[in-house]
Amino acid sequence: MDQSEIEAVRTLLSSKPRPVGWTERRQRLNEVGSVWPVADDITLEPVDVDDVPGEWSIAPGSDALRILMVFHGGGYCSGSILSHRRLVTEAGRAAGVRTLAVAYRLAPEHPFPAALEDALTAWHFLRGQGVEAKHIVVGGDSAGGGLTLALMGQLQKAREGLPACAWLLSPWTDLTMSGATLATKDSVDPLIHDGYLHELADAYLPGSMDRKDPRVSPLYADLTGLPPALIQVGSDETLLADATRFAAAAGAADVAVTLELWPHMIHAWPLWNAHLEPGRQALAKAGTFMRQHL
Image (cartoon, rainbow, N blue to C red; front, side, top):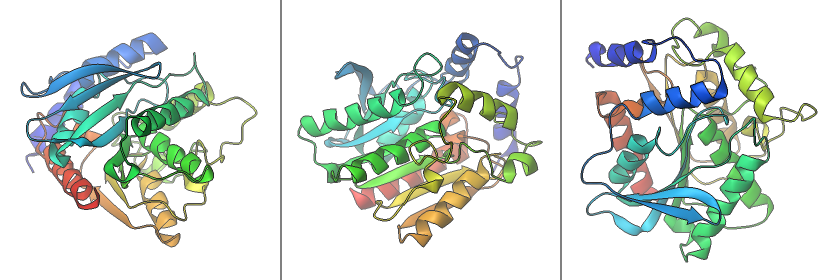
């Protein structure tokens, strides 16, 4: 790998002081996430997902009847369709499917369970459109990965059909923040730090809520019966242990888990796939995984 590529992304992320307020943080994530725009051959279409904003996208030659539904990252407090558009559309291209990006409500204005309610609404929207569960992949990065797992837990609880598989990119699975890599990787992670995660969790969760509740910390859920999952995580992430511990727990519950650890990669690195070869490679591998299970 050309180390200059990931260093350029690190430089982009550190080019301005870390924003403080929620509005500023959201603007900054939109800015750094969309610095490389969507490809010219992608077709985009806004959609009302039963009162939740969404966006369809499709690359030429993709199967419009098979869907990748994606929940963006941002700690449940930021992130948007704009910030993750390049990631979502290229993931759809790699999988050869249509994508649905979901702009779920954000904390602190809309704390838990708003995001999970919107995820369920989006799932039922797809099913109401006549899309079979086995023709849907659900995925997301960071908090979006946690939301993906929370959604599947709720579908299991309701005895509903589950998606064909799940794609989890740098997932945030433990809102108790007990992972050892929060300390051991702190010096190399340019984005995610312990204090920041506690601030996000405080904004997202009611004060009285048990932070091991599986609806917010799927690491502590009963994972039996989940569909196959691909977990992709970088070695330079403070959330590395959230991914590896979840993979171990899912594997112990007889879930078919594929865990990929990417050397030198940072949190949700495929966001910058337009510039970063390992980002493109990771999306290609994710696309192959999804094709195998759809």
